Image 1: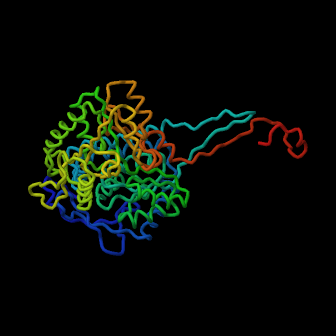
Image 2: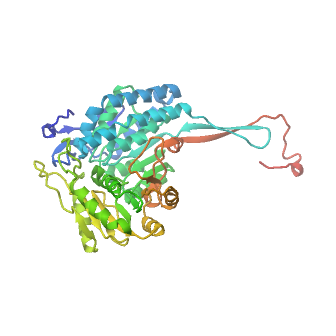
Image 3: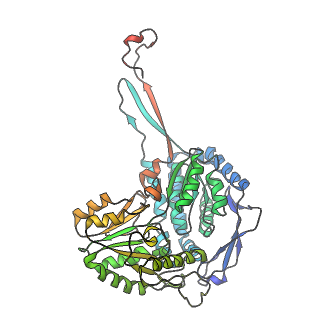
Length: 509
């Protein structure tokens, strides 16, 4: 797909699943429309995969895993290939970030900045693969005990619409570096860059079957993939309810699981922190990606002594954010992904009003000239929000944040932890002791102190409670892509006969 500065000129393309290094026909019913969320226009059509399609992809992946071209590749050769794939990714950045902007509506500056980081994920895990060592374990007696690790096999990966390539690559990089294979089900809203990346990697030398893609609806293709009897690991990023369904299915075949699910990030702002800087972080954390991130800064919990000033300045800052055409370099926030998501955000505006919260700014669909059918929402801030309100407790997944006052550190932690989620949290303070104290006590898998949204391929990423299980990135993710075998070698020559001298044996095992 050729992406120009005028996306309206894009022809509608028909895509199939990507199996064995090429696109193949799939599905047996009506094709699904893929739309540009900035215009509402159909830009591609994809199949809704059947059980037979899923099975075909799984058989291809298993053959690749067990075959000589991939399964027989030594670690150093594979690491060189993964680095070559990173180079190929980098060489195609321009077309990838334009295609992703077209498909998910993030402003082109955001998309470019995010995608330019992704080749490093492949390079990092290629390095980990070269550096890893199995263990030699000291045990009692004249024995040598060591471990052998073998790749677990097929990783089924269900990716969301909000960060199509970034969330894919967090998993794909470690899959390839460990010698596993994958079958990916991208969101039906945003499959285009996933398909493009598979093509790029195949042309760069990735063997067929290592990276397969099945397309379709989550409740169909995604469900069938998660419950397929041949998967060895399930990776899913999405809503908590989707995680429950997919996780239950994968548990039936005892697959490993890593799931990043919902979030309701608390941001605790203490009065020793610069208010203007806190507001700038608040706007970034809440409205980057049109708020469609699991770590969206959706609950600002602000010390009472600076509360009014914070709300006033956040109102002013939010009103300066330029909502518009994602391909316009001056645009700072694009649309949400669909009409359905726009209506969801506006429904939560209604809940905020009904529960007595104070609308500070936004709360309506945004008008963008020339994009009358786009799914734009004005960045929205509610103040005076109590912890029992729906907008405090439930994930909105849009450009929507709330502000709640707190009295002291204990009150801030009480409010922050008053949530079923536990993905990320943030702290704004100049008090070093307080920062570490609060970070240790807040319920979250990721904590940012005086920052937001920062991630790194070496840093573990994931949550607790209804935000999911397992970790992506870092050695935690790398190690979870192996089965560990313990080998115990007797290095002595002592005679042994349990049944000849049972009473005098010192130990059974």
